[in-house]
Length: 170
Image (cartoon, rainbow, N blue to C red; front, top):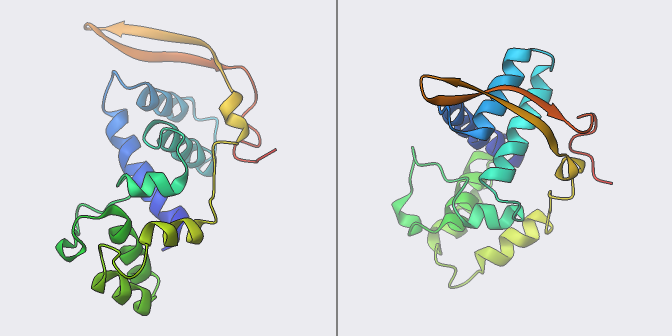
């Protein structure tokens, strides 16, 4: 499983929870996009991942998001890894990708006494930064809320620019 798949897994689980919450702006945006039916599945998934990176990741570099535990797998915890989010991520990533030597190294040294796992993670990600995407400059012109039984739901949304090239840097 590659990094994109891990992020997608976390993002899709989060957005499903957010869609169930009538008070959640990202959930209501995703529901509106679904209801409008004008985007293809890959476009909707890209927007859902973007919303996860912006709301859960808070525009932090990917290594910081991982260190904060946003990509933890709570269904399969590894107590031997001392609840260190970086060690858990590296172990899971190594195990799922057949990197048995790395998985063993992380399991034997979860606190990083021999190897600095945070520095290893930074090197692995090549200091990847995503907030430079074009969507960062998009503004919501008009958000219309529909009141129903005392709760607000997103009725319509207009955006200032086209969503073509949503994740291209430049």
